[in-house]
Image (cartoon, rainbow, N blue to C red; front, side, top):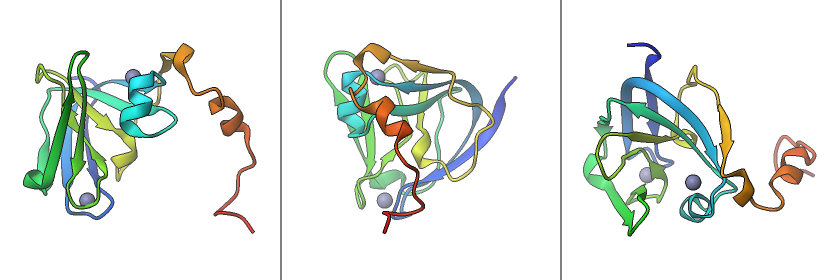
Length: 137
Ligand SMILES: [Zn+2]
Ligand SMILES: [Zn+2]
């Protein structure tokens, strides 16, 4: 299977840790309104993989799943620290890996900014803002 690789990730507190070995199909940065709301971020950066299987090293029973009614928006969080975590879509056929949770670097790179028309008005300005090592002076 091509593009099959192993990704490791965790939540902020470390309670939930996972290892995923799968074919990485896509890496999208989604700017749609729903993704911005559910991630509370400028956009959602997700790798989509098959087969859809998460191997939890720890914390499998310390997660909380939210399935938004209608258009299949799902989020899974660590119940201790609230960090987002990988999840299966409602069909169970696609695995979404929020890239901010990764502890290693995937070979796949973002291939598209999808739903660009719904982007936050300030997202491009933000990418061009001065780059500081920490909060600043
Ligand atoms: Zn946690
Ligand atoms: Zn989206």
